[in-house]
Amino acid sequence: MRKSRFTDEQIVATVHEAESGARATEVCRRHGVRMETLRRWRAKYRGMELQEAKRLKALEEENRRLKRLAAELALDNSLLKDVVGRKWCRPSSGAPSPFSALAPHSCRQHVGAPVRKACQRDAPVRAGDAAGCRTRSTLAPSREE
Image 1 (tube, rainbow, N blue to C red):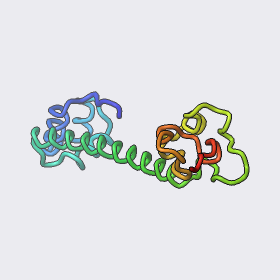
Image 2: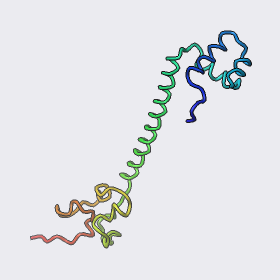
Image 3: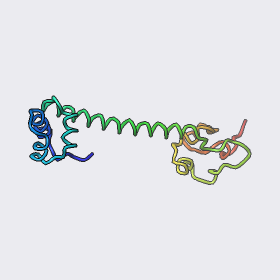
Image 4: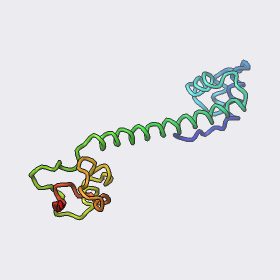
């Protein structure tokens, strides 16, 4: 947001001067503001002292910061829901996996999803392959004894 040319002290003093009975046009001319600005200041700062005006500005800034944070968290939340809802790896069917010829962490590199989320659909066959992201269809068949 754009920084005001006027300090809180100047705004409160201008509003008090206008409330004390001075003509609004004279107050605007003396302080170099437009009538609309004086009306807006009156609506916002009428009856306030300097400390109250400073506290109001601090609360508005905190509210602005929290709203921005809430919007970012909502965006992150919706992105994570989208990631969880997708089918990242092909299920183990007879068809070859598109990631079979790629490196062990190819799912994450290919789609930008974490390894855990990308291979959640098809768990690895062997415990030693838990860190990799190859699906069942790309792993070598295990020997059963």
